Length: 196
Image (cartoon, rainbow, N blue to C red; front, side):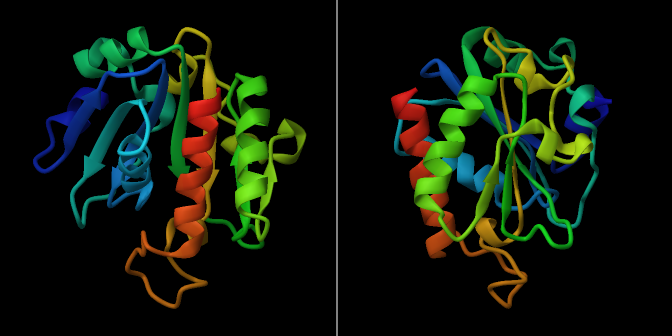
């Protein structure tokens, strides 16, 4: 399935190998909007490795996280081999959860570390890192999930539209990376990555 996605016209894959903390946005571009831009913004400010897939405008194919097999992507395989821990940036939207950030994944110590930085930077939001409080489908616990394939496992960070600079809060469907909330999110991610 990943091979088919990567050979679809307009879909791009990129990776940068740097420090031992890796950031992923493999549902980037038009699918989970702004997630790829958030990874780029963090990488511009600290020494993280990155893996990004961007879907073109008007194309929205949700390949399940568990279908991202490194055997189908040399770039993903190199990323997984290189980093020690990873944070996968995802977007989600659910009624009554427009101000709730979810820190799932198998690396619970890293999830707590990240959640602490997010709470400090974004007091207007609720950040959940207790797995019992995170919806089961958004916990990111499967072994096949690429965030859990790296050496010491990782965190699946689910972000609602508002903190990604999208509606309903901002009154526009065009993303606003310059929103205070999105900039505070980037600040928190930079702090979490550099202090881990």
